[in-house]
Image (cartoon, rainbow over all chains, first blue to last red):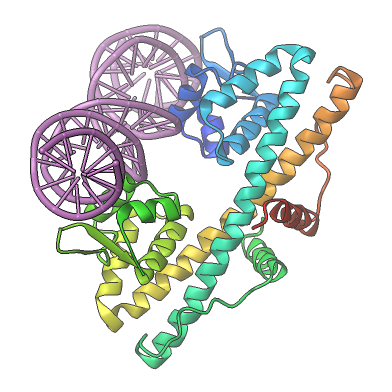
Length: 152
Length: 152
DNA sequence: ATAGTCCTTAGAGCCAACTCTAAGTCAAGC
DNA sequence: GCTTGACTTAGAGTTGGCTCTAAGGACTAT
């Protein structure tokens, strides 16, 4: 299957402005051109775009993503660099999950406090300092429930 | 306990530039001044700063945080608004955890592929398309191990 | 008493990542 | 054959969030 830039924009939710910006920045050398000079994405390209989006979501600057894409074009010699990059990136993602779970705990606690305060009509008597220790599995259960509601 | 802006910067890792910027932007009305006109943070202020940081980390724009802080000054009448805000924010955090776990799965898979490719010295024979379905608990175990290595 | 450190202000500068504008090409449908 | 719409380019503008500079005030240690 082949896709125009507009089709990809619709499919991925990444605007065509942004896709062109990425292309200019050298992030998507896998995008080809048809005889009219228009960009053409194939399924592999869409897959690669998904990986780029994953790296971007996990906080990698576009410059580093460009470097990675460049390595991919460099063939098997750059395999160790790419492995190292992903190992480093895993640390970043693990930290993100960790931090997100801490944030979830804090937000959950705030919701508990505000619910009680709303019932009482005042936040004066609500003890706001003690944050109950929810376990990681409690939090994960919440995420699972959320995933179900989103049909993901 | 009272803290100067520099002490808070050291304690929190937020630069004093940024703390002044937040103050100018109306995010920290709880910061008082001493007789010399210098900013003074107390323990409650530090606590509030922690909440602001949590909201920022979970993607809330500074403008919305300013609104929330303003509501806090508005007394018990704004309790429902604040509760609603946190309930909305919880959805955002749940989505972040969900997305981070998906990203972790992708990065893990890439590491597996690249490890095999490095052993073989070539990525030609490595099947890159099948992403093994790790369960959420597998991923969570990884996060736990990570937390231990970080002594958090 | 003078150097060093920490603070103050207003405002300028910077950066990543878009986001859009203007002017133009091309193919399809009425 | 003309309009509509999706695409092309170069380049300008925007946004959010800092990050720093310059000029100056106040306390501390030598």
